[in-house]
Length: 273
Ligand SMILES: [Fe+2]
Image (cartoon, rainbow, N blue to C red; front, side, top):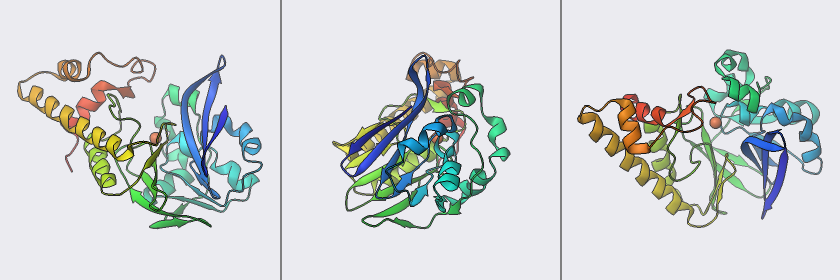
């Protein structure tokens, strides 16, 4: 499934594989002024040409190397002749040689998104220019170490990839770093913007900076609560229950990749920036 929705000059393309007619683990790419931000999972590759038939794509930026963000790079490269696929330097090798990391994908990731084919990528600079806009590249590690956001200061657009998701997130992926995410959120808060376009499909058009502040405050609050319970010698399961509630329903189906306990573990074991 590829669902297209225009928000002024920005086109959101929500992408997901359908099971019994229902989308599973939807993600979103964004298209503006010839720039495509992320290319979606390989499981929708058959729909790409039709979805983009009237849209010239000059530059692609991958916000990070995850399989749901780079899966159709090769379609644009081979069938549309897109030469410029840009990503953080740490992502380039992973995009070009996914065989070096796809063995760690869990069953749910294969089912929902699939293994991305290799594609050619280049190291992104400090800015990305299109005919009408200039995007600042901001390195925002935490979700992955190669994660970047794009900010168009004049329009107030922040394309946040997978770093924001939502204000009160209770789960983390097993490989995410809570403290790095928090540091990246503080970094983003230094900039001015009015709209957040999330890789999850959520778009915040009202009080976008307030939403980011809420997330920072929420993370600071739960971090304090987690450390306080740890100091009282509570175990990780008990801390998780008290601070975040019963484990997420996604914990089982994702083989523990999405879980509240991952967030607690990352707070307690990840390095503070
Ligand atoms: Fe991701």
